[in-house]
Amino acid sequence: MSVRVRFAPSPTGPLHMGGVRTALYNYLFARKHKGSFLLRIEDTDRKRFVKGAEDYIMDSLRWCGIEWDEGPDRDGGMGPFRQSERMKIYREYANILIGKGYAYYAFDTPEELTEMRTRLKTDKNPNPQYDIHTRVQMQNSLSLSGEEVKKRLDSGQDYVIRIRIPENEEIIVDDIIRGRVSVESRLLDDKVLFKSDGMPTYHLANVVDDHLMDITHVIRGEEWLPSAPLHVLLYRCLGWTDSMPRFAHLPLLLKPDGQGKLSKRDGDRLGFPVFPLEWKDTQSGEIIRGYRESGYFPEAFVNIIALLGWNPGTEQELFSLEELTELFSLDRVGKAGARFDPEKARWFNHQYLVRKPIKEVALLFKDFLAEKGISQPEERLGRICSLVRDRVSFVHELWEESYFFFQAPSSYDEKFARKKWKDDTPALMTALAEKLAKTGTLETESIENAMNEIMQESGAGAGRIMPPLRLALVGAAHGPDVKEIMKILGRDETVERIKRAIESISSGRTE
Ligand code: GLU
Image (cartoon, rainbow, N blue to C red; front, side, top):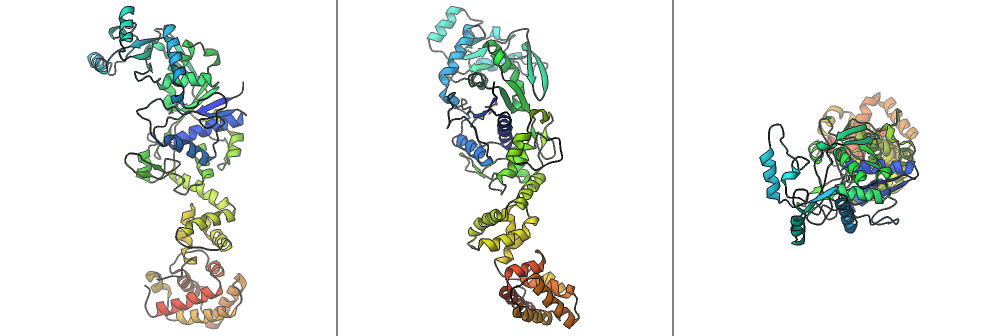
């Protein structure tokens, strides 16, 4: 049977990077095994439904290059892929479970449930459950007479449908990552399968859909491991054990210090994104930046999350989506939580930035400059980017390292000027400007010739020429190699900047 996996997010808000990782691992697993990857929207919890979240999920996956084969927008014959459009199906299976005695109606009001929990609460049992022991004391079709149940149903009284957990059974979850987990059935509670609003709960809908959609492997976050025994039991009750999917629960993503689950608040606190794309909170109007808006390349983001839980078993750290597809295997997904390191994330983006074709970087930088109203030929931008990209991790950071190529200094670093602009500097700079003005285009050789001549004529060393020259061209002590700056600025602009510096700094005007 060919592999079929699914990513089944609930549209309750923006997709966390942990969710994208779950989608990615499912996608890689499907591609590796030449199977299918499905996107199913689990939107049965209407109270937590957030408008726009479904589009956000799809846009995020598309941005990452994680394409699904079947989903709400492409039904391969096993849809619909939005659970809210499959309501009839779930009701049918809830009825089957009741018919077989595996589920029952429960009429308890919220007050009655609270009353039971308070009444039975003890130090030893702080959270009394609706289960084998307590169900007999409650208002349900196991404790009430058939007649009474019929009366209540006919009168339209609110009810839920609960699973009837068997008393003494061993439930085994065979997890590809975690191995065999065995649970005694009496420890489970009679979870609600169908709610009073006519909606199934996640548990019922999830199992029914995985079965009807021929899912072979359920790859999802560790937070669902406690629900797995209930799901195994549901497969058993529905007679689907033979075609039950295999489970793989992925490790948690941990905070940078390794203490606890990575949350949105950590991102705010430590200044890194936790969402792939920008998200505007529908209620508060708050805008949260995503990886995309923070300047991450999608390839880098995918590479970052791929390694949060999986490792290739080699020293290799950079992987394209194609390489990941080839190498990925659930055997190499660890059990231990994966610590997220924001510094390492920046490092990944840097690696992609320095490896990108320079033309591409130039075009991205061109867009960035356009927003500042600066327009430049691509060829010149390419030269600038080649010169400074080693120093940065993001396209927007190129500006910090290259702004002086687009605007002549309007002031000069005072401290640096005091230290490096000596009494004889104006004469040296004037002589250099005159020599440069007589050369053709500035090349390494012509620049070096001009400097050597000045040094010979004046007896001054390079240390007396280069720093003031940098100050004249950049206005500050930083920047790449001075000769490279001169080559890009060109002869006329270089000469012009030297002259302007002589005038301003010598007359004491560094502002
Ligand atoms: N709807 C669940 C979620 O939001 C899906 C869990 C699963 O994959 O079974 O994570």
